[in-house]
Amino acid sequence: MHYITTKNSLIHREGDQMLRKLILILMLGISAFAGAQTWPVKSIKLIIPFPPGGGNDSLGRLIGQKLGDALGQPVVVDNRAGAGATIGTEVAAKSPADGYTLLFSSITTHALAPALYAKLGYDPIKDFVPVSVVALAPTVLVVGPHVKATSLPALIGLAKASPGKMTFASGGNGAAPHIAGELFKAVAGVDLLHIPFRGGGPASLAIMAGDVDMMFDTTASAMPHVKSGKLRALALATAARSPDYPSLPTFIEGGTNGYEFNSWYSLHAPAGTPKPIVDRLRAEIEAILKTPEMRSRIKAFGADPSNISGDAFAEFQQAELNKYTRLIKAANIKLE
Image (tube, rainbow, N blue to C red; front, side):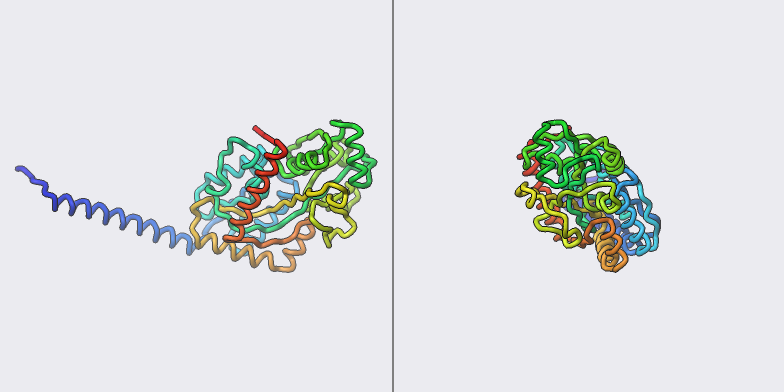
């Protein structure tokens, strides 16, 4: 028996195929929507790309705990440190976009690393959905008790008298304190030796022990040690003095005009995470940050609660990326 394929039958067959594809797409969309409406039904993983024990980790765990309480499901922290916080960030970027993996992100992961590394395993814009900025933390210059300088001009004088001898610590190559130090070197015209550690905690301990001279740390990490008398703060990298630390002068007052460096902490989800889930996350974070208890606890870290979300966060992130790409290029800072 012979079959004759006519033009009309081909059109009919192609129409059937298109209809089946459309039905499949609709079914997948309905399934994803239904999943988003019932989310979360299990624990959520929060990747923190920093080592346990430091200020970044502590703040991330606090956010995770409160978010888990609000959602009714545990938020399990997964520390994936290394390579300037890029290892954990890459893991998050490649995770399923189902709302069950989130990233505790920061200026390091989404503004500094992309400007520093020629080869990066993720795109900070294309591979993520920005959820919300949760806190802002200015950079503060702290020194160990063994350092004789009690002011920024005095410290600059010591550094210029012994080029390459004074040291500054960081939680690793490419971390915010590292870049803050490199930019300070360029602005102040001093030669300091960078000593990287595996995390901010060990870096702070090294300064307290007198093994390293100074660190350009966030207020969130450094100020508890300053309050306890284990470190001494010399300058704050803000445009004006902070009402939280009114006696602490700015870098600008100390003679380094144009030196400002503020860190930020945030939540990102993998690109493709359903919008209803992202909207729910943003709403819960906003509610959490409005509570007096949470604001007080974030303040205790030396940071300021800050709820920047949605399009405003996307614009803020792009502006920060552009800013530090320009500054890092001008200072000729490169990492492999």
